[in-house]
Length: 126
Image (tube, one colour):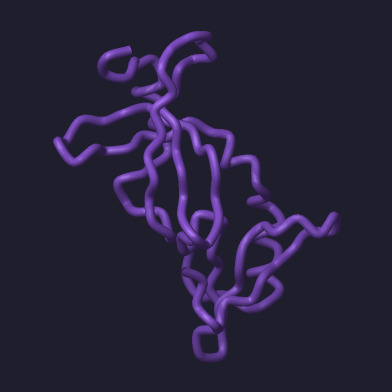
């Protein structure tokens, strides 16, 4: 859940790109997954960080570590302060079961960007 002191930051087209959170005399940046991006900075740097970050990272492939320890390739399906929903990456296949996983907010550390050495890895049971 978004804390009361999180200040929305929207880009020029009014699209929400994250939050700026006061920390003493400085600020920290929170992305749309609710994750902190870097350490304390001044207000202008926080704004610039969110502007540069944008929302494109939401379209990337991620790895989700399941409760049994297996890693599953996923894509982000929905993001809101109520939670993050990811979908098993089906490589655009038609007719395969669509598997969704509901995660908390901020997104847990079990969800991480895919590493370059994992890009060709297929999900279990594909």
